[in-house]
Length: 159
Image 1 (cartoon, rainbow, N blue to C red):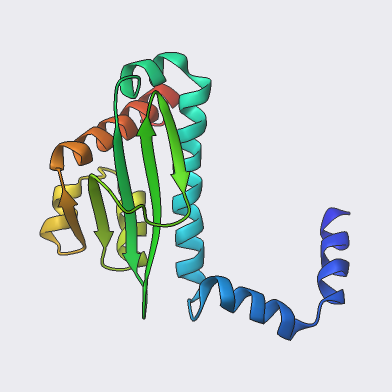
Image 2: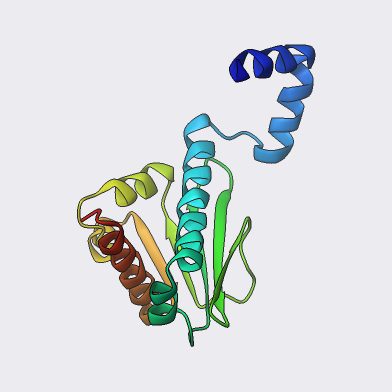
């Protein structure tokens, strides 16, 4: 029923209007890049939700922690980025790159980011050695984020 309503609504909008809206948001991106960007956002929002739901996870990881991260990957003509800010025991996800970051992780393309996210042993050093990722800033922040990710996986029973 919901998909029928959605289809009916979308059929009312001329295709050139929806195309113009999509191009304004994503430019000349392919579908894989768009989905990779949105999946990255979903993961960051999921971690944010975990900090809200699991008090001990929040207290053990971000209660007295301040840091700003930028995660980005190269597209055909641009960079797509999402950011995460930790301050005062809270996490905030940003849809764009923050200015004053402590650590920036740049993947050479969307495929490299997907390979990293779906690998069994998300080892940033292996990705660096394969020239699929560059890191800027303080490596301790990158290690901290990796620890928080692994801690969340363990708590959710994913490992």
